[in-house]
Every structure is written in C-alpha cells, then in structure tokens.
Image (tube, rainbow, N blue to C red; front, side, top):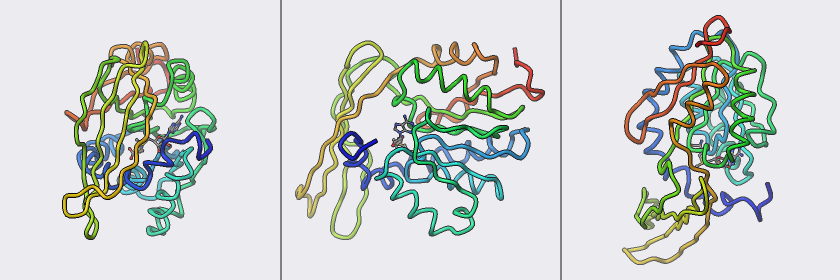
Amino acid sequence: MSVETDPYAVSAPFIDPLIAGFWEGVAPSLTAELTGLTAGSGPVVDLGAGSGRGVRVIGTALPGVPVVAVEPSAAMRTALFARLVDDPGLAARTTVVAADALAVELPAATRAVVAMNVLGHLAPAERARLWRRVAERLAPGGALLVNNQPPHAPSAVPLARGNAFRVGDHDYEGWVRAEPAGEDRILWHMTYKTLQGGRCVAEVAVDYDWWVVTDERLRAEWSAHGPTARVAGTGPSAFHVVTAAPDGAPAR
Ligand SMILES: C[S@@+](CC[C@H](N)C(=O)[O-])C[C@H]1O[C@@H](n2cnc3c(N)ncnc32)[C@H](O)[C@@H]1O
C-alpha cells in the first residue's frame, strides 16, 4: 500500500484519539471473551491493528501471550510502533507485520483473530478467503472476534460530527458522511478539522471505499466453515464471536 493509495496516510494523525472511545467501550467484553477462550497457548492475531489500542487490550487480557499485529498502512504503523515502544513488555511479544489481512500467513494454532473496525475494507471474495484461512488456522476452542459497523446496507449516512479531542489550544473534530456506491458498497467521506477558539484553522478530507454486509449474511458465510457465532457486547461495542469447536471438529 503506497502513500498515494492509502487513505490512512491522511487520517492517521487523528485516528488514535478519535477511536479511543470505541476501545473504552469494547475493552471489557473483548477482555472477557479472550480470557474465556479454551484454546491453547497460540498467538492472537489483530488484523488491521491500526494504532494498537486493540493490541494493548489483547496484551493486558492475556499476559505473556504472543500477539501478531497486522497493519498495511505505514502511517498507522507509526502510531502502532509508538504505542509499543512505550510498553517494553508488550513490544517484546508483539510482532508487527506490514501486510494486509489476506497477505499474512496466520500462525498455526492461532488462539484468536481480532478484527475491529476493518471488515468493510474487505470485498466479499476477500472475506470468503479470510474466513477459510481463519477456519484452517484457529486452534480448537479459538475464536474470530470481529465487529460489523453500520450501515449494513448501501444507504446514505447524513453529515454528522463524530468524535472530537483537544490537545493544547486546538480542538480536533472528525466529521463523517457516506453515500451508496453500488451493490454492497458505500463511500465514506471523512473530514478532520482543527479549530482554535472555535474557528477552523485547518481541514483535511479523505474518502474510503467500504463494503457493507448484513449480520445474517456474515453468519451464513461463517456457517459454511462450521463454527458457531454469537454476539458479545451491545450497541456500538457489539462484536461477533465466531468460535471453533473445542475438539477441532465442526461445531454444528
Ligand atoms: C478504522 S482503522 C481501525 C484500526 C484498529 N483495528 C482499531 O479499531 O483501532 C482500520 C485499519 O484497517 C487497516 N486496513 C485497511 N485495509 C486492510 C486490509 N485489507 N487488511 C488489514 N488491514 C487493513 C487500515 O490500515 C487501518 O489501520
């Protein structure tokens, strides 16, 4: 992924603080799911690890367990490495892989695959390939933990201010809207504003292609490989827990 083709090259300075609230909400249930897994001692893979907030939750939930943080964007890896080197214990057991979800070789007997806020980057055929590879590599009793952000159909999302944060004299705001872009696709329009004393002093914008899918369709995709799926968490913190059978046999 080059800087020219990576939308996160524009948004990377803002993503980590703007996504902090999501991780505050999801951390308790993700921690509970990870600690409740019956899988053995294998690593946890975080697909599209971004700035590493998920890696930190995984690392805290499962002390001593190796983590593989897969992140194709160089801009996002900058934030990820900054988070890791400030936590030497986590850095020692986290391997950062500069690849996308489909290019990475999942370790054998993976304990869990975490994929938060990343699903829409995968086209249906890519999802199908990923589910097959995850099913092959998950340890018995392991799980895929993945959220499906709305919308789940190609509908318009009206312009709204998303999250915001303040650093020094500046307020930073993320603005978001989306429009349908074909069957199963939307186009997100993201705008990041810098304000001083309420006045906008800088603004950058970037568009993201995003594939949309219903939860029903996801469950049908997963059931082709045999695991059971249920939902953990609620509201914006909800995510799917797709569990490989404890004995390695298909769960259904
Ligand atoms: C919205 S960010 C979420 C980051 C992180 N998972 C979080 O929730 O804080 C989406 C991330 O997915 C990464 N990404 C985009 N396409 C990807 C792909 N095909 N495979 C893996 N990661 C991808 C982006 O570079 C970006 O860091």
